[in-house]
Image (cartoon, rainbow, N blue to C red; front, side, top):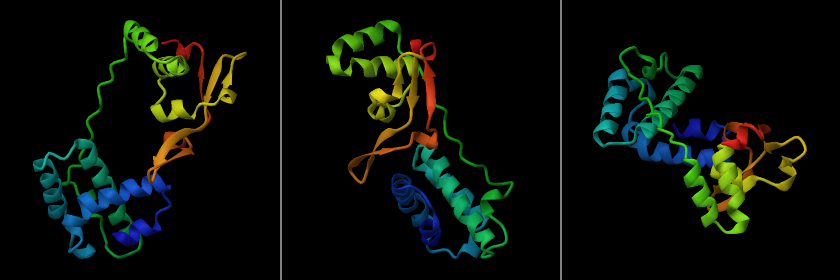
Length: 185
């Protein structure tokens, strides 16, 4: 499983989170098992154990995705014949979709009033364009085309190894644009 991680081309932030998930959720259960000895029963028991420990659905889903990727790579490398995560009797954990409740105009106005002048634009862009915090911090005056009334999201600020760094927006969706109409709330 550690060989799989070493062969991945993740960016550093993703590598850190995957390493954490492997160490916290997957290796404690599977590291003493030979790849060829992992059965669908083991995968089902592992999922049940996460549920019993009240592991968040999103972490269960992410952990399962990583385990399945590891075992698929083992199939590709001809170390095992089948991926036990793909068995019909294994029910893939699904993350619970978050309920998104947009702020009311009154709340947006109150937040904007409460902010120092230099941060007021963050409230408007976050609420009106639906930008993530890191995307807001990555905005540059060059990203705003006032004449065309377009905002281009080309970077975000992320924390990597306790240091702030610029990176592409989440899932590498660079160049995403928002028009004035889209950002009007």
